[in-house]
Image (cartoon, rainbow over the protein chains, first blue to last red):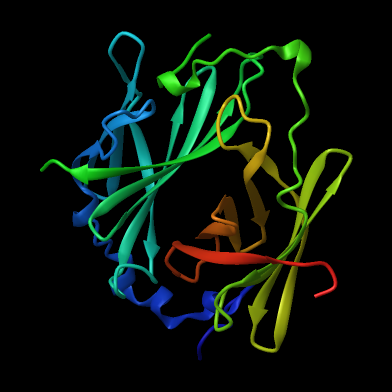
Length: 142
Length: 138
């Protein structure tokens, strides 16, 4: 007897979600070193995504005033992306970079060979800066 | 001022700081894909300078109301005072759903992160859909 699944939308009942193949994350397209397509960026200059077993490690380098700023390496959680990349079961990474004064929540995906990082920045200091969202594009250097 | 990327190094005059302009968001946003099996529409409203969100998703027999929840607001940059994005979270018994929206070219792009907490062995997954704001009374 098939157990009844709880749901909040039809997609929660999609049989693909319980297909063991969906849990095998096809993340090869995400791995490697990525450089910002905008050489004049004032944000993230580059990003490296590595895989260690089932874990994904993301490191990033921000553009600083006097040189690059290494961001803390962080572990990303991987989610199946069922609907993009021509029906391929692609992967999206969700990674949070935790600074004392700011938190940067990102999601990272590949679309047509371009790595897209969407970043939600939340400031924890009393600088008066607005929390903001930003999106940047990266090309593979591997 | 601390920063991790130089775009965050900005001059802010806290004495003359305006409240965040939330006017981009209140109203009804409908999914651009009428065949969606996910979120069909978002109802956003403003009260006392805060935004809230009601989510209606497609179910087998009609729309499922997820209820109303608060949102965190994001602008387009550290010195901007115009709302351009939001994040929100629904925590149900069996699934946690995080929503992250941003306005691009007049559309709301909604990233959805579904993490199952039950023992159904369903894969955590991501979806990204587009929503158009419809005029009042539509």
